[in-house]
Length: 251
Image 1: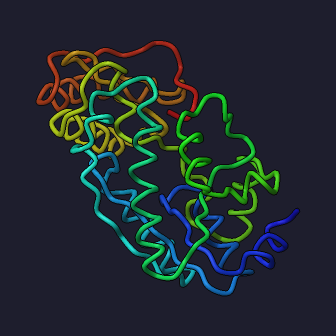
Image 2 (image 1 turned 90 degrees about the vertical axis):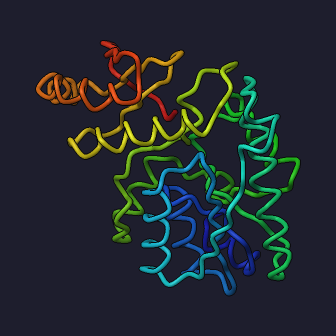
Image 3 (image 1 turned 60 degrees about the vertical axis):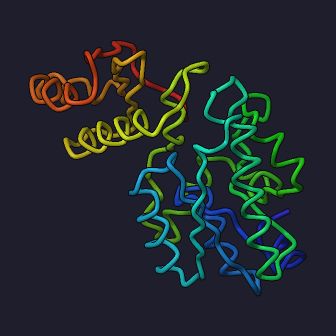
């Protein structure tokens, strides 16, 4: 099945929209082939501000209505205690909120941007999506991450080469309680490093210390700005460590 066929059969849908490559292309395809679509962006303490900015820009450029829903995710104890399957409880909260908002707008079908490259065995959140009957057209149509980037570039979407981005909660190791303070430190540190030109990196929280994970191509930049990084991140962490293994993976 192709996306054109999917939206011919499902012409009215609500789309969970993150501002990332996958959900952006899904939104673009829905605009082309569906009849009635609304994007739902859930803003919580787990999403940095730039993700909301990207989502708003993309929705405006392709002409799709977008609703922003605020969720106090830190009030969910099952999430903040940060168990290994935290993503399951978070997805339940986030998509449950989208389901209720979409129902108010007259939608019964909820879609998300999971693609054919995503490993269901590696993502507890997929269990929540299945339980809530959320469908994933990109996955159903066999579209891989690489193909989605290619199609997004052809479509002229500005996010086509945007690095994969996992929520801020993934910077906190399982078993460590997630707090607003830790999330604030993480966002501030990553915003600063992004301004230095680093891409596709992470600042991991380890008991008050920062562990930087960067791709090999960014190692030189980190060393060139070593003193500045230590000074800036020293505002938030007891110490700053550089992981010498090149970062890979989505989270």
